[in-house]
Image (tube, rainbow, N blue to C red):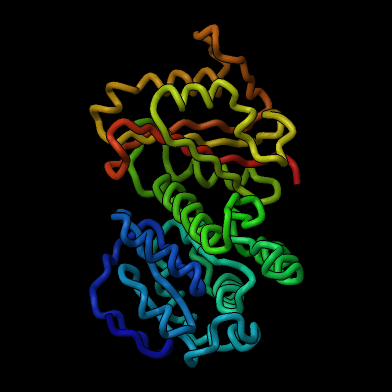
Length: 334
Protein backbone atom coordinates (compact mmCIF):
# COMPACT_ATOMS: atom_id res chain seq x y z
CA UNK A 1 0.00 0.00 0.00
CA UNK A 2 1.45 3.34 -1.01
CA UNK A 3 1.42 6.21 1.46
CA UNK A 4 2.57 9.72 0.65
CA UNK A 5 2.38 13.19 2.17
CA UNK A 6 -0.96 14.35 3.51
CA UNK A 7 -1.61 16.82 0.69
CA UNK A 8 -1.13 14.10 -1.93
CA UNK A 9 -2.07 10.89 -0.14
CA UNK A 10 -2.70 7.99 -2.46
CA UNK A 11 -4.32 4.72 -1.48
CA UNK A 12 -3.49 2.04 -4.03
CA UNK A 13 -6.67 -0.02 -3.68
CA UNK A 14 -10.24 1.07 -4.50
CA UNK A 15 -12.63 1.50 -1.60
CA UNK A 16 -16.39 1.11 -1.73
CA UNK A 17 -17.77 4.58 -2.51
CA UNK A 18 -21.01 3.71 -0.70
CA UNK A 19 -20.55 3.20 3.03
CA UNK A 20 -22.83 3.84 5.97
CA UNK A 21 -20.14 4.42 8.59
CA UNK A 22 -16.63 5.89 8.46
CA UNK A 23 -14.24 4.96 11.27
CA UNK A 24 -11.17 7.18 11.71
CA UNK A 25 -8.29 6.07 13.94
CA UNK A 26 -6.25 9.06 15.08
CA UNK A 27 -2.70 8.30 16.24
CA UNK A 28 -0.67 5.12 16.60
CA UNK A 29 -2.61 3.35 19.37
CA UNK A 30 -6.00 4.16 17.85
CA UNK A 31 -4.64 3.14 14.46
CA UNK A 32 -3.96 -0.37 15.76
CA UNK A 33 -7.55 -0.62 16.94
CA UNK A 34 -9.05 0.56 13.64
CA UNK A 35 -6.73 -1.71 11.66
CA UNK A 36 -8.02 -4.66 13.68
CA UNK A 37 -11.58 -3.54 12.96
CA UNK A 38 -10.79 -3.36 9.27
CA UNK A 39 -9.78 -7.02 9.42
CA UNK A 40 -13.12 -8.02 11.00
CA UNK A 41 -15.20 -8.03 7.80
CA UNK A 42 -17.18 -4.95 8.82
CA UNK A 43 -19.79 -4.35 6.15
CA UNK A 44 -20.64 -0.93 4.68
CA UNK A 45 -17.80 0.65 6.66
CA UNK A 46 -14.76 2.66 5.58
CA UNK A 47 -11.75 2.34 7.89
CA UNK A 48 -9.02 4.99 7.87
CA UNK A 49 -5.89 5.43 9.99
CA UNK A 50 -4.08 8.75 10.39
CA UNK A 51 -0.62 8.87 11.94
CA UNK A 52 2.63 10.80 12.08
CA UNK A 53 4.99 7.89 12.58
CA UNK A 54 5.99 6.08 9.39
CA UNK A 55 6.79 2.82 11.18
CA UNK A 56 3.34 2.68 12.80
CA UNK A 57 1.71 3.54 9.48
CA UNK A 58 3.70 0.80 7.71
CA UNK A 59 2.35 -1.71 10.25
CA UNK A 60 -1.26 -1.00 9.20
CA UNK A 61 -2.41 -3.95 7.10
CA UNK A 62 -6.15 -3.67 6.44
CA UNK A 63 -7.28 -0.05 6.80
CA UNK A 64 -6.59 2.90 4.53
CA UNK A 65 -3.65 4.80 5.95
CA UNK A 66 -2.46 8.37 5.81
CA UNK A 67 0.92 9.66 6.93
CA UNK A 68 0.76 13.31 7.90
CA UNK A 69 3.56 15.76 8.57
CA UNK A 70 7.21 14.82 8.81
CA UNK A 71 8.14 11.44 10.25
CA UNK A 72 8.88 11.64 13.97
CA UNK A 73 6.26 14.20 14.94
CA UNK A 74 4.28 11.51 16.71
CA UNK A 75 5.13 9.62 19.89
CA UNK A 76 4.22 12.40 22.29
CA UNK A 77 5.83 15.38 20.55
CA UNK A 78 4.42 18.92 20.48
CA UNK A 79 0.62 19.04 20.34
CA UNK A 80 0.50 22.41 18.57
CA UNK A 81 2.73 21.13 15.78
CA UNK A 82 0.51 18.06 15.42
CA UNK A 83 -2.53 20.34 15.07
CA UNK A 84 -0.77 22.48 12.47
CA UNK A 85 0.21 19.61 10.18
CA UNK A 86 -3.17 17.90 10.64
CA UNK A 87 -4.84 20.81 8.86
CA UNK A 88 -3.24 19.62 5.62
CA UNK A 89 -5.53 16.60 5.72
CA UNK A 90 -8.80 18.52 6.07
CA UNK A 91 -9.71 18.19 2.34
CA UNK A 92 -9.16 14.43 2.55
CA UNK A 93 -11.17 14.05 5.77
CA UNK A 94 -14.00 16.27 4.48
CA UNK A 95 -14.32 13.99 1.46
CA UNK A 96 -14.38 10.85 3.62
CA UNK A 97 -17.04 12.12 6.03
CA UNK A 98 -19.30 13.56 3.31
CA UNK A 99 -20.77 10.13 2.50
CA UNK A 100 -21.73 8.16 5.66
CA UNK A 101 -24.60 8.53 8.11
CA UNK A 102 -22.21 8.20 11.07
CA UNK A 103 -18.55 9.09 11.60
CA UNK A 104 -16.73 7.35 14.44
CA UNK A 105 -13.50 8.90 15.69
CA UNK A 106 -11.24 6.60 17.72
CA UNK A 107 -8.48 8.31 19.72
CA UNK A 108 -6.24 7.39 22.65
CA UNK A 109 -5.92 10.68 24.49
CA UNK A 110 -2.64 11.78 25.98
CA UNK A 111 -0.59 11.51 22.79
CA UNK A 112 0.19 14.51 20.60
CA UNK A 113 -0.88 12.86 17.35
CA UNK A 114 -4.29 11.67 18.51
CA UNK A 115 -5.17 14.85 20.37
CA UNK A 116 -3.91 17.13 17.60
CA UNK A 117 -5.84 15.28 14.90
CA UNK A 118 -8.97 15.09 17.03
CA UNK A 119 -9.01 18.83 17.69
CA UNK A 120 -8.62 19.74 14.03
CA UNK A 121 -10.79 17.02 12.48
CA UNK A 122 -13.69 17.53 14.90
CA UNK A 123 -13.60 21.31 15.06
CA UNK A 124 -12.68 22.31 11.51
CA UNK A 125 -14.20 19.71 9.19
CA UNK A 126 -17.39 20.52 7.37
CA UNK A 127 -20.51 19.19 9.04
CA UNK A 128 -22.37 16.58 7.02
CA UNK A 129 -26.01 17.42 7.67
CA UNK A 130 -26.96 13.74 7.47
CA UNK A 131 -24.16 12.29 9.58
CA UNK A 132 -23.82 11.90 13.32
CA UNK A 133 -20.47 11.98 15.12
CA UNK A 134 -19.34 9.53 17.78
CA UNK A 135 -16.07 9.91 19.67
CA UNK A 136 -14.56 6.75 21.17
CA UNK A 137 -11.78 7.88 23.49
CA UNK A 138 -9.32 6.11 25.77
CA UNK A 139 -8.14 7.77 28.98
CA UNK A 140 -4.53 7.00 30.04
CA UNK A 141 -3.64 5.32 33.32
CA UNK A 142 -2.30 7.50 36.12
CA UNK A 143 0.99 5.58 35.88
CA UNK A 144 1.56 7.37 32.58
CA UNK A 145 1.46 10.63 34.51
CA UNK A 146 -1.27 12.36 36.48
CA UNK A 147 -0.88 15.53 34.41
CA UNK A 148 -1.32 13.54 31.22
CA UNK A 149 -4.46 11.90 32.58
CA UNK A 150 -5.99 15.19 33.74
CA UNK A 151 -5.17 16.78 30.39
CA UNK A 152 -6.93 13.92 28.61
CA UNK A 153 -10.06 14.44 30.71
CA UNK A 154 -10.09 18.11 29.75
CA UNK A 155 -9.76 17.16 26.08
CA UNK A 156 -13.00 15.15 26.27
CA UNK A 157 -14.83 18.18 27.67
CA UNK A 158 -13.36 20.35 24.91
CA UNK A 159 -14.43 17.94 22.18
CA UNK A 160 -17.95 17.18 23.44
CA UNK A 161 -19.59 20.21 21.72
CA UNK A 162 -18.42 18.91 18.34
CA UNK A 163 -19.84 15.37 18.59
CA UNK A 164 -23.22 13.77 19.26
CA UNK A 165 -21.94 11.11 21.62
CA UNK A 166 -18.84 9.96 23.50
CA UNK A 167 -17.84 6.47 24.59
CA UNK A 168 -14.91 6.24 27.00
CA UNK A 169 -12.50 3.44 27.87
CA UNK A 170 -10.67 4.34 31.08
CA UNK A 171 -7.37 2.48 31.49
CA UNK A 172 -7.72 3.06 35.24
CA UNK A 173 -10.70 0.68 35.37
CA UNK A 174 -9.01 -2.19 33.52
CA UNK A 175 -7.65 -5.13 35.53
CA UNK A 176 -4.18 -6.09 34.31
CA UNK A 177 -1.05 -7.70 35.76
CA UNK A 178 1.45 -5.71 33.68
CA UNK A 179 1.68 -2.61 31.51
CA UNK A 180 1.79 -4.69 28.33
CA UNK A 181 -1.30 -6.68 29.33
CA UNK A 182 -3.04 -3.39 30.22
CA UNK A 183 -2.51 -2.03 26.71
CA UNK A 184 -3.58 -5.29 25.11
CA UNK A 185 -6.73 -5.46 27.21
CA UNK A 186 -7.49 -1.81 26.45
CA UNK A 187 -7.13 -2.46 22.71
CA UNK A 188 -9.50 -5.44 22.99
CA UNK A 189 -12.11 -3.33 24.78
CA UNK A 190 -11.83 -0.53 22.22
CA UNK A 191 -12.24 -3.01 19.37
CA UNK A 192 -15.30 -4.64 21.00
CA UNK A 193 -16.88 -1.27 21.77
CA UNK A 194 -16.32 0.22 18.32
CA UNK A 195 -17.38 -2.96 16.54
CA UNK A 196 -20.58 -3.25 18.58
CA UNK A 197 -21.52 0.37 17.89
CA UNK A 198 -20.82 0.13 14.15
CA UNK A 199 -22.87 -3.07 13.94
CA UNK A 200 -25.92 -1.21 15.24
CA UNK A 201 -25.71 0.97 12.13
CA UNK A 202 -24.65 -1.52 9.48
CA UNK A 203 -26.12 -4.95 10.31
CA UNK A 204 -29.79 -5.61 9.68
CA UNK A 205 -31.72 -6.32 12.84
CA UNK A 206 -34.15 -9.21 13.06
CA UNK A 207 -36.44 -6.75 14.86
CA UNK A 208 -37.67 -3.33 13.80
CA UNK A 209 -34.58 -1.37 14.77
CA UNK A 210 -32.84 1.39 12.84
CA UNK A 211 -30.41 4.28 12.74
CA UNK A 212 -32.99 6.67 14.20
CA UNK A 213 -32.93 4.64 17.42
CA UNK A 214 -29.17 5.17 17.72
CA UNK A 215 -29.62 8.91 17.14
CA UNK A 216 -32.33 9.01 19.79
CA UNK A 217 -30.09 7.23 22.32
CA UNK A 218 -27.34 9.82 21.86
CA UNK A 219 -29.80 12.67 22.28
CA UNK A 220 -31.02 11.20 25.57
CA UNK A 221 -27.53 11.18 27.12
CA UNK A 222 -27.54 14.44 29.08
CA UNK A 223 -23.74 14.50 29.33
CA UNK A 224 -23.28 12.97 25.83
CA UNK A 225 -21.60 9.92 27.40
CA UNK A 226 -22.85 6.55 26.14
CA UNK A 227 -21.97 3.70 28.50
CA UNK A 228 -21.30 0.23 27.13
CA UNK A 229 -21.68 -3.19 28.74
CA UNK A 230 -21.20 -6.50 26.95
CA UNK A 231 -21.78 -10.13 27.95
CA UNK A 232 -20.63 -13.19 26.01
CA UNK A 233 -21.20 -16.79 26.99
CA UNK A 234 -23.61 -19.69 26.94
CA UNK A 235 -27.31 -19.49 27.68
CA UNK A 236 -26.98 -20.22 31.40
CA UNK A 237 -24.30 -17.58 31.90
CA UNK A 238 -26.27 -14.86 30.08
CA UNK A 239 -29.48 -15.73 31.92
CA UNK A 240 -27.74 -15.65 35.30
CA UNK A 241 -26.16 -12.23 34.66
CA UNK A 242 -29.39 -10.70 33.37
CA UNK A 243 -31.33 -11.79 36.45
CA UNK A 244 -29.40 -9.15 38.37
CA UNK A 245 -29.32 -6.45 35.75
CA UNK A 246 -28.55 -3.60 38.16
CA UNK A 247 -25.15 -5.17 38.90
CA UNK A 248 -24.14 -4.64 35.26
CA UNK A 249 -24.58 -0.87 35.45
CA UNK A 250 -21.50 1.39 35.56
CA UNK A 251 -20.71 2.93 38.93
CA UNK A 252 -22.20 6.33 38.07
CA UNK A 253 -25.69 4.80 37.92
CA UNK A 254 -27.14 4.71 41.44
CA UNK A 255 -30.01 2.56 40.16
CA UNK A 256 -31.88 1.72 36.99
CA UNK A 257 -33.91 4.89 37.55
CA UNK A 258 -30.85 6.82 36.30
CA UNK A 259 -31.23 5.31 32.83
CA UNK A 260 -32.83 7.69 30.33
CA UNK A 261 -32.28 5.51 27.28
CA UNK A 262 -31.03 2.03 26.45
CA UNK A 263 -30.37 -0.17 23.44
CA UNK A 264 -29.81 -3.90 23.94
CA UNK A 265 -28.56 -6.02 21.05
CA UNK A 266 -28.55 -9.82 21.20
CA UNK A 267 -26.09 -11.43 18.78
CA UNK A 268 -26.35 -15.05 17.63
CA UNK A 269 -23.73 -16.97 15.62
CA UNK A 270 -26.30 -18.32 13.15
CA UNK A 271 -29.99 -18.56 12.31
CA UNK A 272 -29.99 -22.05 13.83
CA UNK A 273 -28.65 -20.64 17.08
CA UNK A 274 -31.31 -17.93 16.99
CA UNK A 275 -34.02 -20.56 16.55
CA UNK A 276 -32.50 -22.62 19.34
CA UNK A 277 -31.79 -19.87 21.87
CA UNK A 278 -34.19 -17.18 20.74
CA UNK A 279 -35.95 -17.23 24.10
CA UNK A 280 -33.05 -15.24 25.55
CA UNK A 281 -34.99 -12.26 24.21
CA UNK A 282 -37.84 -13.20 26.56
CA UNK A 283 -35.45 -12.93 29.50
CA UNK A 284 -34.39 -9.49 28.30
CA UNK A 285 -37.99 -8.43 27.92
CA UNK A 286 -38.56 -9.43 31.54
CA UNK A 287 -35.73 -7.11 32.50
CA UNK A 288 -36.66 -4.30 30.14
CA UNK A 289 -40.43 -4.30 30.31
CA UNK A 290 -41.13 -5.92 33.68
CA UNK A 291 -43.15 -8.82 32.27
CA UNK A 292 -42.22 -11.36 34.90
CA UNK A 293 -42.72 -14.93 33.70
CA UNK A 294 -39.96 -16.65 35.66
CA UNK A 295 -40.14 -16.84 39.44
CA UNK A 296 -36.33 -16.72 39.67
CA UNK A 297 -36.14 -13.37 37.85
CA UNK A 298 -36.16 -10.13 39.76
CA UNK A 299 -38.61 -7.45 38.65
CA UNK A 300 -37.34 -4.20 37.10
CA UNK A 301 -39.33 -1.21 35.94
CA UNK A 302 -38.10 1.27 33.36
CA UNK A 303 -40.96 3.68 33.81
CA UNK A 304 -38.54 6.61 33.90
CA UNK A 305 -36.66 5.61 30.77
CA UNK A 306 -37.64 7.61 27.71
CA UNK A 307 -36.47 4.93 25.28
CA UNK A 308 -35.70 1.22 25.61
CA UNK A 309 -34.98 -0.66 22.39
CA UNK A 310 -34.17 -4.29 21.66
CA UNK A 311 -32.26 -5.47 18.59
CA UNK A 312 -31.23 -8.97 17.47
CA UNK A 313 -28.74 -9.87 14.77
CA UNK A 314 -26.51 -12.62 13.39
CA UNK A 315 -22.73 -12.45 13.91
CA UNK A 316 -21.04 -15.29 12.06
CA UNK A 317 -17.69 -14.58 13.76
CA UNK A 318 -19.02 -15.83 17.10
CA UNK A 319 -18.54 -19.32 18.50
CA UNK A 320 -21.40 -21.70 17.80
CA UNK A 321 -22.57 -22.04 21.42
CA UNK A 322 -22.12 -18.41 22.43
CA UNK A 323 -24.63 -15.61 22.79
CA UNK A 324 -23.56 -11.99 23.10
CA UNK A 325 -25.57 -9.16 24.61
CA UNK A 326 -24.37 -5.60 23.94
CA UNK A 327 -25.98 -2.91 26.09
CA UNK A 328 -25.70 0.81 25.35
CA UNK A 329 -26.86 3.17 28.09
CA UNK A 330 -27.62 6.90 28.36
CA UNK A 331 -27.69 8.54 31.79
CA UNK A 332 -30.39 11.10 32.62
CA UNK A 333 -28.04 13.24 34.71
CA UNK A 334 -25.18 15.53 33.79
